[in-house]
Length: 442
View 1 (tube, one colour):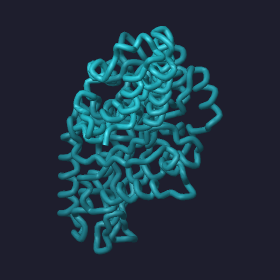
View 2: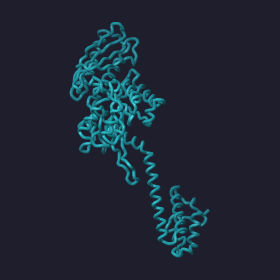
View 3: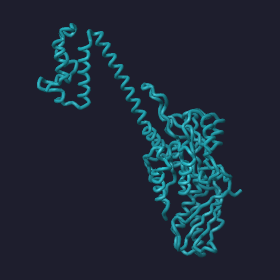
View 4: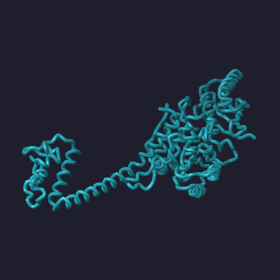
């Protein structure tokens, strides 16, 4: 069968007596203008052409356009006007559909940008133990149906509620703003209970004054110990500029949390990923708004981690957690991360000693092993500046319980802290029976 469109068009060309300008036109001319027609015989149609679906659709559209030109155009000027009108409509439709597609794909675009920034700043092509969850921020905020919250808890707990903690998670990153304190607290408690450090973001706003005004109303920073395991960034990154050719209204903004988490991963636990030397982030072209020194001081004082643009670099400019109690160590995330790491190593060690009777010999062995571990992590460019074991003894009333008190001085802030570890090591020892508490001394 011949294509109805090509047959109609050829009939119009062969019988176009009413259009003098086309009297000399015939099938040969049309085949030169539309090359695929050369392969259509009298017996074949468009469907018989060896063309892709897209090519056939384009050919049909072209034939339809020619049909419109021959039917409605009374001369070359008319035809030119029809073509321009069609072109403008096509351009408008293309831009509208493209804009809708880009808008629909923005969450995916932001996610890919964010994950790329994590790897870029982690300085690793692959991470040995990395779990990525495909979830929208609204799903992570849903306390009535906490499917995703429970899934994260189960995953982290699977590596924590065990004797061997060597494969335990250290970071929990939630890009975007969780909103209400009841949601933030749910996640913060999960991180605190499992000794992982949580990195998240404050709301994306257009100016520092807006951030300050909004943050002051949230009461995110409080004297709650579990908030010591949480940091919150502000001043979102520019992932890319807006597309002017589709009249996009704004740039694409990316939450800073994953880039900061990558920096935390690559730097030493004891070193805050902040400032020009240790807080400069890779792969970022800009931030939402400029900050002056005065703005930095205010945002840092509130408990946020602001992103600062200087000399072509984006710099994280704070080491504060969301905890504002008297314990200065718990206000500083590098200290919290060191304490959590040391506690997990010691808990892992004592878990391996379960069922060993506590006596003079084993006590001496324990002290030797603990001192050996801490010695390896004491000194310049390491985790702590100094330490001393103040107590390692058996509970006189509960013989299966052991108490460890360890003084440690981190590099920043210059304070002494006491780590209490209380747990069972006798017949009833369990993997999750150890508790750790941190106190500031002097």
